[in-house]
Image (cartoon, rainbow, N blue to C red; front, side, top):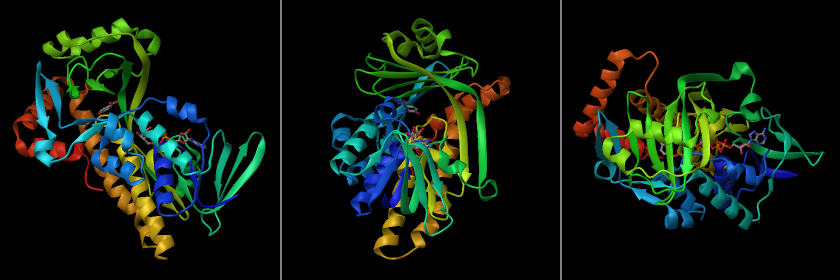
Length: 389
Ligand code: APR
Ligand code: PHB
């Protein structure tokens, strides 16, 4: 099979890239290791920057998000027993939208299907080849039969554990990493959210986050130990621990119910540089991971593929390689700012094993400064709603 662009991975990065390319007439094929149902079963964050919603609109996949998404103008920071609101909209004129990643993925899958574009699900042994030449190709096995896509470019949108980054010679890539000494235990429950906006809690027992998927479905997280196992966290224990970390009003108003999903995720900051290797580009989690504090992961995947689609459009329409030559530097400039922001949010809000009483006081001083200084809360807001694309 031949296609201008072979995309590896049908997560949000690969699917959005496919639609952005299609919108400028660039044909593409996606190879995905899992089934579509499996991809849709992964529960992840659910907060979209305006720029990300704009990209969904650009490819005609934003209607349901506008109907069902919840627009948030602010967020709350809770520490020292009290809650403080940050008015992001007043500070920046922008809002964020609560709309689950699963829904974004479903909307993009439907758009792809309507456009009649090829996605090969359950593609095994996917392997990019010859991306250092003018004739790259991707081999795979489907239903026991070997297949190959010859293409002009390969887009590695296959997440942190994908094959694209792993195919690059070690001397051509530099990796930066910080692994945090805790995880997030998250549950989803069909209960109304405790507050209509998100509450980020710094507490001596550890961080907690109150978020939501809709006005009937809540998502809560508590910081946990990396040694913890999900079996050690029956629902009652989760709700008890969450309540202990909330301010009194939130603890009193919290409506609990059976969990419909429960999982533990480790926290990591990771960047691989560069994001281009000849005729192969990396985008999304394939090239960087952020801790979920601030929900930048999906939004960064969206900005990467926005830059990449512009670069490829320039290549085909204007016969210019300037965009593809600049892709890595342009994407990384935004990536590192989001890596910094999510590292900073994580550092300020979590309990670190070695922070001691001094570290805890520094966190409280920083939070107090944030909620009392216009400059500081504007800086948080500007990053939270998303830096310009
Ligand atoms: N061959 C084919 N597909 C693969 C391979 C492979 N060898 N390895 C991984 N994949 C697929 C995965 O099954 C997955 O569907 O690539 C896809 C990568 O999707 P995500 O992990 O969702 O990554 P991305 O699209 O970059 O999305 C980034 O989504 O999950 C969040 O934290 C993430 O929010 C961030 C955003
Ligand atoms: C979520 O809704 O899952 C979410 C929201 C904000 C975050 C992290 C996760 O910072």
